Length: 320
Length: 296
Ligand SMILES: Nc1ncnc2c1ncn2[C@@H]1O[C@H](COP(=O)(O)OP(=O)(O)O)[C@@H](O)[C@H]1O
Ligand SMILES: [Mg+2]
Image 1 (tube, rainbow over the protein chains, first blue to last red):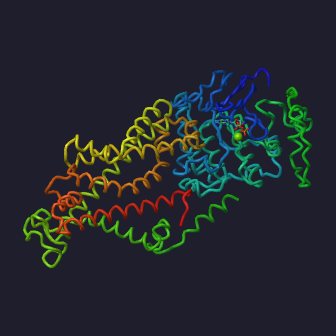
Image 2 (cartoon, rainbow over the protein chains, first blue to last red; image 1 turned 180 degrees about the horizontal axis):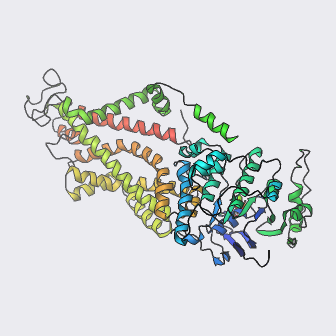
Image 3 (cartoon, protein in one colour; image 1 turned 180 degrees about the vertical axis):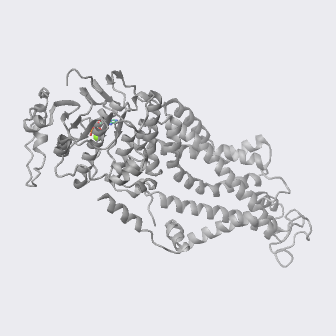
């Protein structure tokens, strides 16, 4: 990865939430994300994953350190409008129940993303919709990661020709829904469908950084892999980097090129997915991997967790 | 998988008669005898607001009948000290009292919502300033503050509405603010901000539409109270001036003719039924929309 400039980078982030006592949620986190990669951020609930996502988007102000997006610091969001230059960082949230406005048809919400892309394009003198958004790449490496998924099940080719690329209906089709669904309200969709819609809205904005904050955790097991695959496929086809957050390694492993393992506000292990998966170095990662049921359904018993002191071992970094 | 699901949902639009669907849509509180009566009474008063002067047997201001006629053949509800037909005056008064109550409630909702939205959305000193002011107004006894304001402004119906407005917006500001505080942390509001919404657009698109439901419930609960406050001010001589057919001032005039019972009883009943029926509807709506309240 060296030699390339990262799209977005976290530099020594520290986050403290006020309270009695204050919560030191993130304790010195640094990482870099590069164009075209899918990175999984995993760790148990409460370890600070969402906080990192919110700092990256500017929703939370770090106590120390900063986020660099294309080499420029990300300005924490105040009451004013988000700087246009930073709107290339988009996010899909965890709770399908609140990730969409219940009082607006989903088409209008996707249109917000399209409007933003158009506005950014006008500002930079480029035409929107002509960008990298298109059909998914026939990259065998991506297909390999998805067990038994047809590469492009969701997109119907006839409809793709009829609808303009930059329309809410077309985006709904890209995420496996129908163009006619755009006039429906969020409550008439299932959780998985809402997360697809939220993904469509975020990607319609043509981001080059997409953050999924546990976008599949609230979905049932059969939908999880599908939505995760869809997100990574669409993000990659758009040339965006995807930071996929989860407390569950089993699905992340299928889509991520690289893993960041987090524990208690720190990154304790990082490296290519295969390396971390097959050769976990940090005691915490070993426990995390041990807790995953085997795909054959036989089940794998979690290791007896060592005392927390053991987790304080120095971070393990696998060479790329 | 998704395609099948969406089609299933489209097919479930059962055909029912309009009355049946209205009945199903009505809050449970109105689907019992007392609730039904309240709804019918309120509806009847609203109709009278619209067509009252048309169905009135006499001109409410004309002094053309014998004075102090008890209820009977000449005048269904009797006549007053100037020989005006009481029924006609009560029918005409509906428009004054209910109309102004609706106006008052709408204005309170407007002012309270704007202040509550600003306080809740912007927080910090905006919130501090607005809420301290709201608390200040709430610290005074409502009726007394309204009376003092009305007296200071001078007796007129318009001033009575203004005085009532001074005391009736704070609950809206409070409710809207607390709803906004809850909404502000919602993921879809964050998403909007991430998509570059300005504060104004975020409020208009993501926040305001989600505060309307609870605010309308509060408003419907408030119509009865507003009617009581306005007729109370008129009763005290701080609102409607003499020839205007206003229920509060009619009761007030009746006080000096205590033996002519119909002069006070009928306008009083009008006030009572309006206040009770609208309060009942408001309660039923609140129970239906607030899952925290036990349903009986
Ligand atoms: N707004 C907040 N105020 C106070 N504490 C918070 C807030 N958000 C998160 N926390 C705390 O910070 C820690 C990390 O939270 P979070 O980033 O949401 O973890 P994760 O997403 O990994 O579950 C937790 O202990 C949580 O309780
Ligand atoms: Mg989280």
